[in-house]
Amino acid sequence: MNHSPRTTRTAVGCTLLVIALGAGVTGCGSDGNPLSAAPYDAADQIAFNGPSKGEKKADPDKPLEVTAEGSDGRITDVTAMDGRGRYVAGELSADGSRWHSTSPLAADAHYTVRVSTEDEDGAPGRKVLTFDTGKPLTKKRLKVAFGPQAGTYGVGQPITAELDQPVKLKAQRAVIERALKVESTPAAEGAWHWVDDKELHYRPKEYWPTHATIRVRSTLEGIKISDRLWGGSTKPLKLTTGDRVIAVTDASSHSMTVYKNGEAINDIPVTTGKAGFETRNGVKVVLGKQYFVRMRGTSIGIAEGSSESYDLPVYWATQVTYSGEYVHAAPWSVGSQGYANVSHGCTGMSTGNAAWFYENVRAGDLVEVVNSYGETMEPFGNGFGDWNLEWKNWRHGSALLKGNPEGPKPEDASRLRPAAV
Image (cartoon, rainbow, N blue to C red; front, side, top):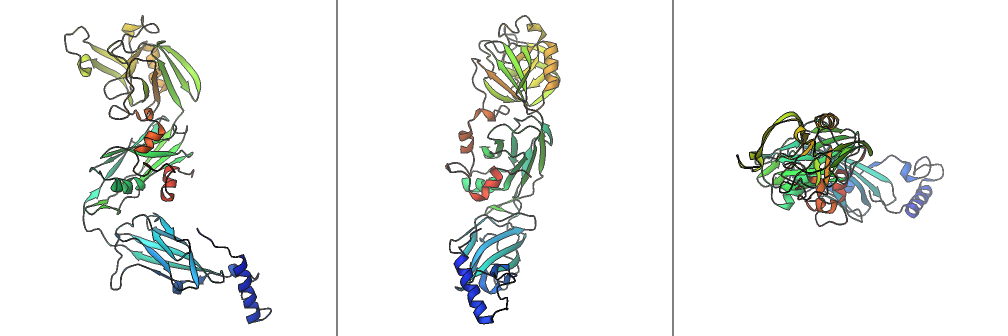
């Protein structure tokens, strides 16, 4: 909200009113201040580009504009909101003569616009305007599906948004990204990252707070993305987080230390990938758990009948990549656990330790591998390697933040730094 200095103008205005009306007449309100009077009707002071004469509804393609009429007043604030509670971002000129929207209007929506003004004496004025927008000309709608499913996850779980149609242009991506809202309690700064033309991931700068509530929603419905595409309705999502559980596997010392809320709660002898099958370094997010998995060498490219071929029943299996990397029971390698790396890429441990690990982690918890000769976990495409991107590089994947080192625009600030509610 923009305010101009009022002290001098208010004093002059009150003096003139006292002289004109005589002592004892409270033209400036009961305390002699024009700001204490009820706001006047500012209808004669403002104009806006609502529906044209003869039209019942406004064109949602056109930006909303409110202007001050004449020279005896100025606009001090404008709020515009539709029936779904979606605010329209806007900018007010320095002299208070014009306000215009900077975010698109929704089609087929009812808007309420509240305009605040002040006259040349500093007295406040108010005017409420309403209008409806027309329906979009095309029926083509973009659908968005949020993930994962509602539930409780570890503090490393990214949010996903799957689009049913590809979107390539940065300006169109910005419209979509601005409408995808993530709010956490406690608050956590975060950002969306475009994985490809149809998928976005959202993660905080750091891991999620423990025992947080995360709400994800879209305000894209009725918003124009392109001439042939408008936003459709999207089902909101609510997640919660549990404790901060991080398992750190040191491939060089053949050990795993499990931390819960910063405290080490277990040290486990393990074996990781041998030469040629080294376990990936980096941070991985637990994808899920299976009591029993049949593991075959052919699933990772080992030819049947070769010296490396295997076909094994595996129990207490916790999955960390789509390509088949697990933390699991490996009773056949107990003699090497804590001493040597003999697996084909998984992290193996005794049956008892694997059962303990299985029972004490959930999807979204974190498994970090260090000191392996393997490559670093891919950020995308093989599970959730999102945390292996530095924050500045993560921000580069945003259509709103890339090339904007000074931070988000005002209309994006609440989405990127959600306040506790």
